[in-house]
Image 1 (cartoon, helix red, strand yellow):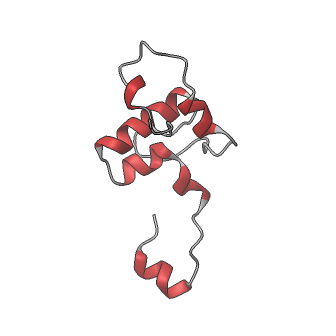
Image 2 (cartoon, one colour; image 1 turned 45 degrees about the horizontal axis):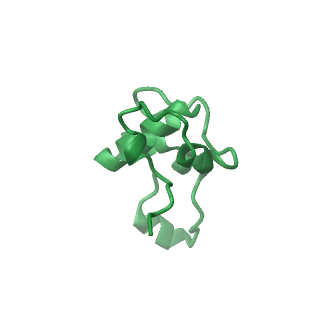
Length: 88
């Protein structure tokens, strides 16, 4: 990932496609939340190896909708999956 100094110096605020891959983001800076996002993305077809090098970027339209509308309620992460609508 690009550092803030590089972004400020170049003035380029757009993200690179690889920065959208949840698995690559997890390997770059692991957190519990990123681990859940990475696992859900992997389940929906996103790929990256152990070092975070993606073989396929998960940029298809609607992948967040796929995760939000997951149909695997037996999954231990089902209630924690990202991109759900907040309950009112």
